[in-house]
Length: 178
Image: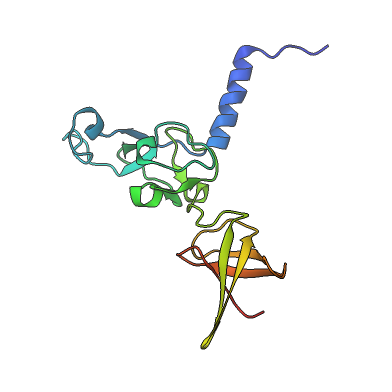
């Protein structure tokens, strides 16, 4: 017969799992700007100013667009430094898409965010082949989603042939000779 797990053992296991899966906590204090209206870099005069970073203030789910309202500005405790490969500035985060669940109070790893898709999977797109003065255009269906600069596969609507090309900034696909 199985023994019931004690509540405290279950809580410890859940906390351990959350800490391992959730990444590193941000050792920080709330920015003064949120509580008193002062600048984030103006901390109590007896403390040296720490680095100011952005972390989630709520759970951000995979596929969700990161808005500045879902982020909180905090100042790292003096002597603590953010780890490498984490996104902490608004330019790095605004409008990006979460690839995995981002937990409140945790750094956001650069690998946990991506650009928004410019073309979705299954969308009809214009495909261009350009060689010298020759330009050939066709309609195709994307087989993968992609952002500007991504190399994706598309299927030619007329011939059914699968081509690979680069997503351009205007949402078209440029293919090369194969």
